[in-house]
Length: 214
Image (cartoon, rainbow, N blue to C red):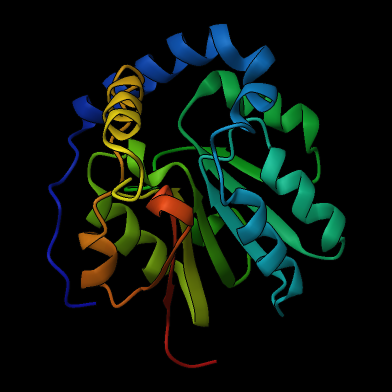
């Protein structure tokens, strides 16, 4: 796509991230969906948009508990859905929740998309997962390369928070940092010609990178 990379993740980096995720989500998984609905804003806006669009295959990067894929399976019962999840704890839970979905353990930067669904992928979705990935450029490029012509990489994540009052913005950044999350720098999306829209207060953004053709 002619974009610069944002650093590459080594095998040691990926394994360290996997261990962190397993430790964290082992404790929080039972309350994850209930707690996240209050601050992972914009997810349902994106899911509603996707529900109205014409596609039949979608892979989510970091599906977690499977919450988003389950909602899409209701709105698009004939769709073929998959996910790439680096956290063993979450993958076990999502497989039990979504037995028909194609879920695999892996990392966005190195996932074997070609074997995941067994057919062309029309959407790859990052829902509040790109901000937790170190090599964001690698992750976006791998997703883009896996798309069928005319497909899209879609991202919803924390934006720069510039529209929030100073104290609120600083407090949120500090709190997110405790969980290895940094509000998303839009540069990797801009460099890849994404169309970006922002939520109120620039709390979140939705970015879409479309592949020509189709």
